[in-house]
Image: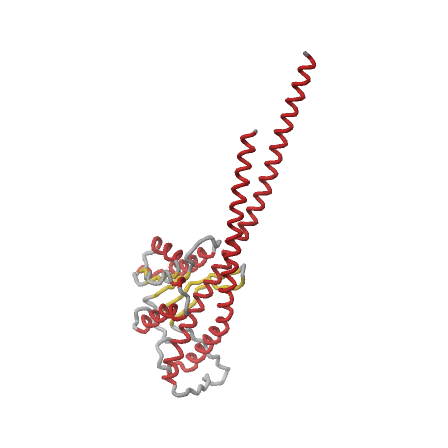
Length: 299
């Protein structure tokens, strides 16, 4: 019985140490989450408004715009950017982002992958490790460590390279699989089209001609669009990365909170088991003493 008590005591000690670690990791994740959440919440309204403006401009200008970023071509060559975290211990966050990307590879782009014209650009170690082992697609691993520096200029290197590749017809379509930050407990694995810029259909009333919005450009249309469109696309790509960054810390904080609660529940169960075993041992000892005393009296 003493061996059983010792084993339970050791398990309780082990669970206590684990609980201390998960509590500390939760606090660290919470501190990092506050900064990451503030960054994405400040950027998202600006980036969304810019994206809406870009879509509206390109949809209304149609063929009158000189930019190539809105040109839709036959999809023969595809680049899929997969944004995951560098570290684990964040629940199913990375798995969900990878699943969303994998569904695209095996579904919509299965023929492109079979033809050897699909490229995966992973950002974050978890995505890079997975696709190196589980896909025949071409891997561009130049930006795996991008999360070490999330400054706008550093992230813009990736978006600039993607934009140049699209303009040079290296890719006909570029999509990004990332974790969209909704709140601390909710992160959505999302696949968004980066290039070409998606357009909206201008609705046509029955019996009336389709009309376009009349934009006035200063100094001139080409100069403004050549500066504005790359800038908006860089901001949009920065939003994908910051969204994933905040989602990672939110998922890790939730995972560590759940782990702490599970450890507390396990500790309570072990305490009950320990007290029960201890009570059994005491009862057995008392029974032996009483039995010995009765034997002596009978002698």
